Length: 390
Image (tube, rainbow, N blue to C red; front, side):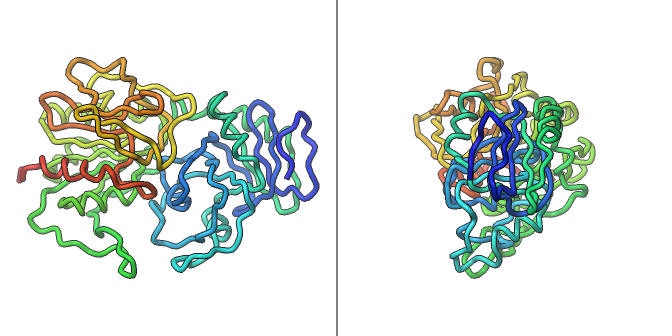
């Protein structure tokens, strides 16, 4: 398929298009759902786990460019869904999606995309698009699919230009669950799925859902905790009524400063009560804000399953899974906050610990899914510091 060009001429056979806010038009073959979606274009360097990526709520209002060319080759199945709420609105891939070749597949990725209302675009030079994002930053864009190939390009450009972008946007309240519920289910095993785990006598973790991945809760259970998941805007009194031994702050989409308007006062109150706290991704960022640091929008963000992170205390390098477009500014860390991890790609903050408190967070995703398992020890560390309060 033809790629971006100064003109908006549509190549023969093009049924999909990606229109950037600067007027760039990238044609291809559409797949999945028909329609139009707007979001920020990012790229993900993982070689596996595309279904987990597409169902990660942290990708809400984003269009994922996969750098790995063969997306769809293992099909789709219900066990690899990370959340039932909205994740990425669409994806851009190099090769046309072919039929699956994997014994776990229950359906084709194209069918799954269509049923979940997600728009795909194939036939794109994803290397060129990725380089553009690296050089110019993540752009706002519209992705569209019409099997008849009928597009109003000027209207799509206008829509991309009018979308406000992720900075200042609170998306956590949109993707969070609406009711509190006890979490059931442990680690996945081939042929067995997600097994049930007894929780009698285990320390109780209340997990605040800002747009969480299910595998986080499975890892908390695996590490020895009993988990209750509550909505993003749950009041402090309601959290304390559940008598937690510790509180977990989940990942999620959007600007941490925006979500922090209602989340940070609750986190600060929990810190004042010396509640053990563990935060991941967005939860880590808001823990940083609660401790006195600030966050900022990144140029291109970090998204993939191969990001090297240095653990400062001993120099150990963990290969991690990441998905974030904002970061804690390590120059803003107050004296009572210790930086524990840094990215070896750009030196950005990847972990903090609050001195005198049982509270820490990491920017990356130790639960993987997809990704390596180097950092599971963090779940054991958190559960290990809990003491039964009730």
